[in-house]
Image (cartoon, rainbow, N blue to C red; front, side, top):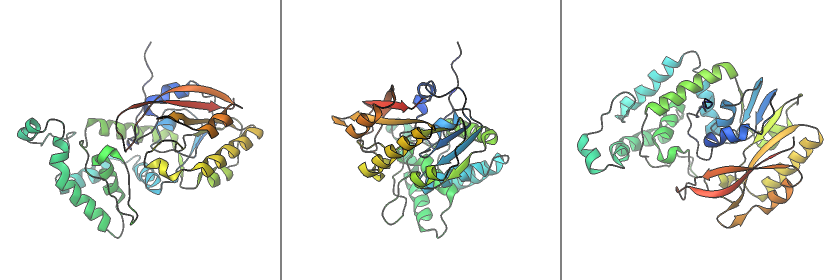
Length: 302
């Protein structure tokens, strides 16, 4: 039996469901009218799920801006690559997809960190130029994401991108992810939103066989993304899902129930009203990049 290909998001979003898509999809309905995601992140779920339409939202403006930026190049992908490679060449960053320009001696002396060492100064110049620009360049932000630590998007309180260089570059995997993304979205034509999840879900005129998939920030874990979440927002989400259930609107929600000795008792108690499906999870935190075995579930009301 040939395994279904899973497409990876070119945002390489930490905490996305790329490795869990196959498992999660087994619990989705066979027929989906519109897939509705209030916490779309990198987009690994919608990219790998068939539906008649896609309503995709995230509170992170930078994430939505990158998605919209990439989608704006559908049908003219060569223009996108010309733009990206022009910036990469301008700053002298390595680009192993095109050519391996990292000196052999650097690789020999720093076998595990040679990309970071080669690109550090160049990356920092790009970061400084981006932060000092009056009109932030989305193409530059995307390159910072690709070359940055853990391929994350993080800004300080002054609104400046503030991650250090990572130990990776624009390689064949990045190109493949972009190529798949352009091809997939040429067909899917998703609609993008940048709203609070409550407003986003509240404004939709729901139709038969719509499915809401939620992958909210996790209340008991420590990633940068999860700092935006608190118990009040968790309660609001759960109350909203109870309302959706009364309206016969299908939903599936991912969440972590146990992590490093902590448990999300609020979600655990709430989930007992619905169908609970244990999910094999490998959660990676910015603060601790080792893989931690945790308890994650998918809860559905169908």
